[in-house]
Length: 385
Ligand SMILES: Cc1cc2nc3c(=O)[nH]c(=O)nc-3n(C[C@H](O)[C@H](O)[C@H](O)COP(=O)(O)OP(=O)(O)OC[C@H]3O[C@@H](n4cnc5c(N)ncnc54)[C@H](O)[C@@H]3O)c2cc1C
Image (tube, rainbow, N blue to C red; front, side, top):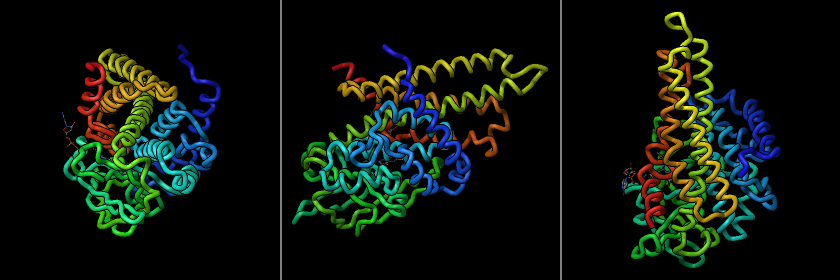
């Protein structure tokens, strides 16, 4: 067992941090206030190989590993502590992975170089107004006819819908090709956001303002059959593969944010004086810091194990990615809350930036990339079988 990163990985972390310091940090507060990540950031990140790092070199990507992708995810969250850029990154990384693994050659040749360069976004459209956890019961229909698939229905809370429409891109969309067969009747289709018959309605979220969440209506949307990912009626399995990998990236983002918050908090409690001492001299506070440090370390180690198992193709990796997705957002929320309290009244102001992180992290407690109870269901089923 080896607990160190390789020299290449240490360099990747250093270079990513340096790139983000220059190209992302100055814009973070604007991203939250204006609700938009600058398009140039995606292009620059693409040029630096950190916008969708799992894409293979033959498609113009850097061909990095899941562990490398975790390193990048942690670093992005340390800089854009609103979580918006982390969400863009993790979707682009995980769903490009699914396209690369299961997509048809023609579609991969067309899309993957664009995604790797930061010119196109790729996300997932699974959730419907009737619910997100019970994927098998989606009703959006897909009818295969004359070399096309015709889509009708509605998706909800879809991240990146406006970015895909305005800057280029689309979503791997789950449709029912056999309404009678539950999860065995689901097909995955790549639907560009610019397709005729798509209607996008932006939802006003409480956090991670730099990436949109929207409802998407599909009114007789036609896409070529080549856009069907893999086999008809196998889409549920591809989506689970994608979600299981995406959860590693979510947890990495939460861990990166937790580390950054704790660092800022430690700096503050050492400086801030009350009753003639530093706040850090009060055990009530230093013990909280000790607990947080321990929990963040545990969360990171669990997530590195999940990434390692994904890299070596261990079929049990999904249990670890679910455990990671269960714990990391809760630890991040706890960290943000405690650090905000150490900061006192200043922590409650927008100036401190802490509330921005609280708003962002909450999306992962609520459900993005799978609700917490669903993680527990996956873990329980695996350990009880
Ligand atoms: C900011 C944000 C961005 C999102 N982006 C996307 C996206 O890009 N693409 C996409 O497809 N979806 C997206 N989602 C939707 C997300 O996947 C869903 O929120 C999630 O799957 C949960 O679905 P739901 O919100 O409909 O809640 P429901 O499925 O209605 O569940 C509600 C609550 O009940 C609990 N629950 C459900 N079933 C059980 C059970 N059997 N036992 C115990 N408890 C249960 C859940 O844990 C949850 O707390 C996003 C969500 C958010 C908040």
